[in-house]
Image 1 (cartoon, rainbow, N blue to C red):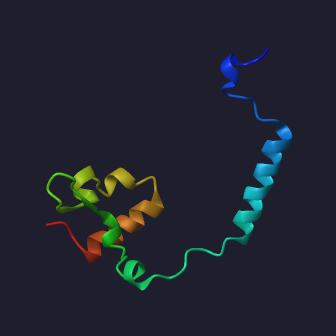
Image 2: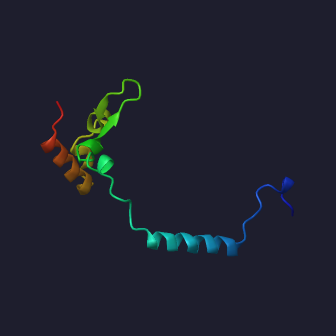
Image 3: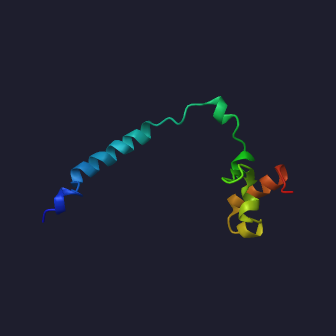
Length: 93
């Protein structure tokens, strides 16, 4: 059955497979983002836990914003270790 007005034409399996293979090849060849000191040197563990409030423009710590405690992350050791590190480096006031 023909689609109404030809919209939403079904892509054939051969085309899908070709696109998938092309994507896989591009992923294998990807070497990562080039180093940009202006952007990259400013990224720290502490800065990754700050978000900017859209209303005030103020930087807010996500731990405070979300009310995250160590107890909340007891079942996720990776996040718990990150939170412990943040609390040592930059404790909340």
